[in-house]
Length: 426
Image (cartoon, rainbow, N blue to C red; front, side, top):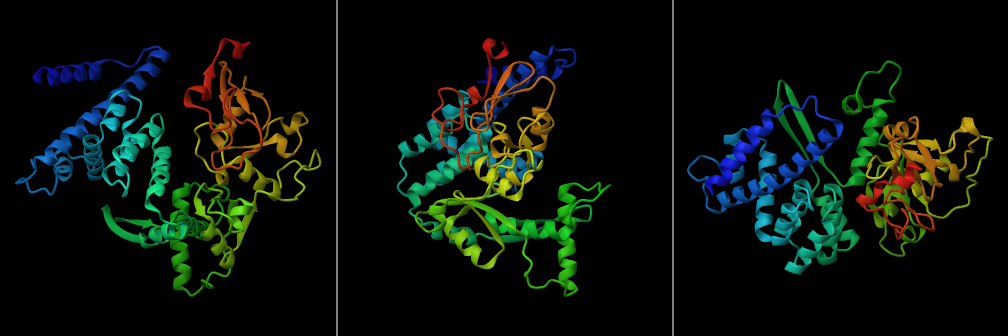
């Protein structure tokens, strides 16, 4: 056993001493991914050791309250990270399938930590086989997708209605304050997503829109808006919420009418149960974007910029940035003409898509070509890479295929999202 750890120490020391400057680009890329893979597997090893230390109560007598607390104190690392590592270790001990997925590289450590909550606190009625199925479903997923898969998986066992689930979230609400040093304090709010969106929209409205030469970051502007809102309240200038910031929510007509328990989604990607959408419509300025309608959404060459009606239709269709894997929601996206206005492009939905600012810039880089239309959108990058740009998974997809060739219509697999072929460069 000592030989293993000696070899590990030797390998790490050699890697630390290895010069990175001067390496070819492809070698740097390969080494970045290889080291990440090693780190993920080592985090699994570390989590297992920490769990064993907890099981043996090796921290007792040290003045600490748990193995994670002891690790954070002695190693001077983040307490939150140590607690997350301890949860992962417990889950790896309870699920061989999860341990194998992390060891063979089919799941990252961050994704395994997202799944660990379900393994450690499985709902009533969930068997070992059910947990194994969840782990298999999360192989290759990123942490955010894994958390969503866990939530969906839990709902198949808990038997809660959407009303019960929303009440449970409501009961978890909290607002805490803690000092962080240097005369600063941190305010942490835990709220259901749609309530948090209402709070953020109100703060943003109080902060006002950025003006010319405004050097503040978005986070700083929101902080100023929160202070401004409290100052206005202290002065008696808050009018009881009669002027409400708009929240744009997309929801299917059937779900909105109460036929089923489908969810709506805000322009920022927040999931909102149908019954909550109906409730909010009674006491808020709510723009409901139903997935049916009669608005005229084709403007040809008469209007250059997308109208509000077109924006809402794009929220429904695209759901956010179309670049694969990008999670920037619709509320932060630009609207782009696939065929540029300057080149004769029309301001019609069949020529408009949503990109975040970064990927909007990427789309307009020299050498990038648009392939297909909005319902089968692909970009050929300057190096020949084909990028499949399906709508966001929360979008209401139009009929027909939206993924790459051979895809049944859902989001393309990771290995097909960026496919380099000799034919693509031809």
